[in-house]
Length: 311
Image (cartoon, rainbow, N blue to C red):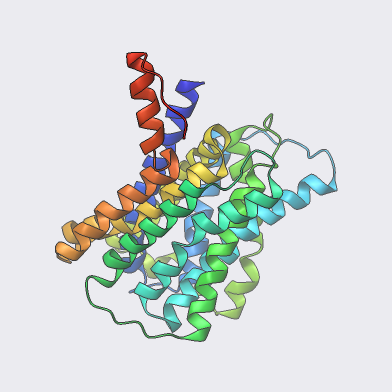
């Protein structure tokens, strides 16, 4: 059980690190491609790779199970990424990043009422508050420039809500399903529900227009690593340690983006951002371990075989 937990935490940590880097790749791709084109290319590549890895086709037990996969495709792929990317066109990136970071607490709230073994705690709420202050410092870089835009900000909140629903729905998947097949089928429905948006935004999918090396590299990074690999790892993390505990690692995404932006885009890190990073790590620790003072005291006295007086 301990090894299972450790593996679940490591999978979540590696996944959010890669997802933090994807903001840089997407920022580079948006110079040449529409958001919906990035979405389509990314998940086509991911689907093909997963099909080559696991070409077997499994039949769903009933229509309800098929609808569950459709819901995963909509909430975790097509509508989530569309809402997030369109929000960036209406609102500041800092606003969107901050609002998307509400996904873990939204996940916890939904799971509290829908999943029997996923209940909220004081540590989770306290950790959320500490982490969100840290995210605020990282995102705004010590400069409070909060320009509200109802359309963009609402879309960002909807995106966070969609990811929360996706994470909770994962708990309803039959554990006997092959993990690669679960992701592949999710991507199939994600692509299927993206097609209408391609026509709506008049996407140009002629590959010959997008063959520059930076475009090809970043598209394949998003498709092979950030989608095909990371979704499988994330699903396994949710399976091993639960939807709430794995979701808490999403708080680290803005911190990873900050660090990689410094190395790749030359966006310098300052004291506010370092303090924010420390608060984010503290928030993740609190959500996982609680405030822990009483617990540490009991463990200390237990180890010394000294009785702890009850108040």
